[in-house]
Length: 169
Image 1 (tube, rainbow, N blue to C red):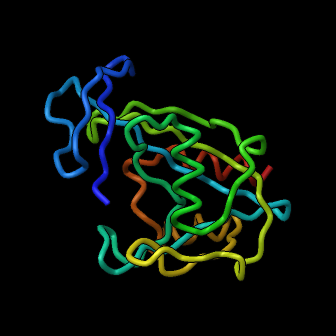
Image 2: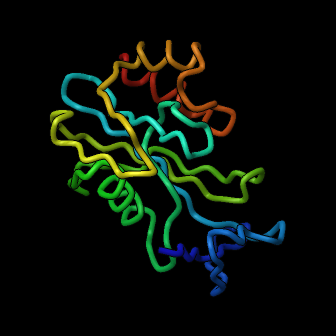
């Protein structure tokens, strides 16, 4: 399926333009919408997934996420991405927008969502060509994975350190 993205201006207003995923925003004043989804359980763990070998940053762990499709709002994109990548349906009432970041280097608006959800790893259905493993991990374990370079590089996700601090308190 070809992905089509809405284009936003530098103030996050939709321009009425759309582009194909392969085109990426062309102008310095064109952005698209991206979501990162962090899923936290009642035991204080985070659900993370491993990228497949065919993807950029192969076989590294990450939170779930992706780009919003044309016509989708941020919450709808977050719920869809998790459903596609992990096969689970999140309750929208158990999620909140943690942070919204304008990232000029990627020309996107990155909305970071945090959801509370409890499930067994056995309930996860991995999406072929997207995810190849999943696990529940503590904030400390994720911090160690970051240090060991087994977690996706955080040059574009500095907020993760603050998010992990909150979950430890």
